Amino acid sequence: MTANIKERAGKSSYDAVVIGSGANGLSAGITLAASGMSVLIVEAKSTIGGACRTLPLTLPGFKHDICSSVYPLAIGSPFFRTLPLEKYGLKWIHPEFPFAHPFDDGTAVIFHRSIEKTAAFLEEDSAAYRKLFGGLNPDWDELSSVLLKPPHMLKHPFGLAHFGMKALMSARTLVERKFRGRKARALFTGVAAHSALRMEDPASAAFGLVLSIAGHCVGWPFPEGGAQGLTDALVAHFHSLGGEIVSECEVESLDDLPQSKLVLCDITPRQLLKIAGDKLPALFKQQLSRFNYGPGSFKVDWALDAPVPWKNEAVCKSGTIHIGGTMEEIASAEAQVVRGEHPERPYVLLAQTSLFDPTRAPQGKHTLWGYSHVPNGSTFDMTERMEEQIERVAPGFRKIVLQRSILPPMAMQEKNANHIGGDINGGALNLGQMFTRPNIRAIPYSTPIPGLYLCSSSTPPGGGVHGMPGWYAAQCALHNWR
Image (tube, rainbow, N blue to C red):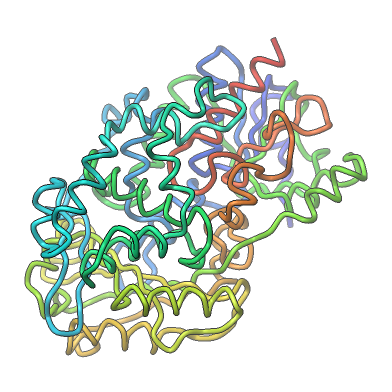
């Protein structure tokens, strides 16, 4: 039964109410509270954080991130960088290498913070890699201020044309034009596949470029103690500004909320239709109903008796691992998912945070976090296929597994209602929805209802833990309110 939000809240009215306590909801709440507003955040779950939570999913003493775990876009977020999060205990841990891409034969490509050192692994493509990323002049402050900004706020949208022309390519086109060898091709494709797009789709290269540049500029770190460390720091800062949070209060209708001038929703279009559909114009409801959700994620967390026995020892020094073999294998697997199929050899994303953060597991034990893409809402169990992929590059892996926690797409949605059908990006990140999330409006965060805004990853700039949709939505709300 839904708790009575009005009874749980500390006051009968607020300047603003935020629905959802994910990174975007917290960012919106912080922005509004910093302006002097009284702000209430309402969360349906018992724990705060949405996708950024850490829970004991397997055995006592093992900490597992329920969704996101590694944060190049969080440490590089233009908004988070303005906040004193370290003051509240946030400590970023940087593995020696941000990520690695192992192969069946025991070789591996190791991604370094240094462009030069990464290029050194790429044999015949060393010069091409240096030219590509050196030519982009990866100044993260300049790049992130453009890439993580909605189109209507860009004063100079063509200022990074040298980047944009490459970003609009498909990942496969860029790779085949720039690289000849399997190592460079697989390395870039493994990063681009974070998008959950087909590698032949326009703009899929953007994800490989942005995440690689972030890796070179700011790294791929994670919070000490788990993803919850980032959430806890955001919550502490929000409270320091006078903000209030109530949990275990699911919003079933806008009428459930205390009186307020503004309501910002860290939810997806489907949920907005559920709680506000009776108040929205028919045309806007029709537009929201056409919003497209992307592939789901099949997630597995492992409690391990020992570190993963990688064939290549250098992989042990990497925080994130991309498993999927060659460019052609990864592209084939991701295309199968988009067609509604379950690949025999899926692309698998892993994070081995306990190697660098001993707070994640009992002494001598370890955790492993991983997922593969599956069709949205899939009920197929991918555990065996994922573990077969790991065994290809780490033989004997299954022998060290103590326990598994399996979260298929609908369990992911149960953990976080924004993950519709297991889609962790708040909607498909294809070219059609990259700039028109959730539909075509001059201000993408606004709705036809005065004072009601969307602030989730279903709005620009989309998925990724960086808080930017929440920040921008709150700025728009403040501008219109004043």
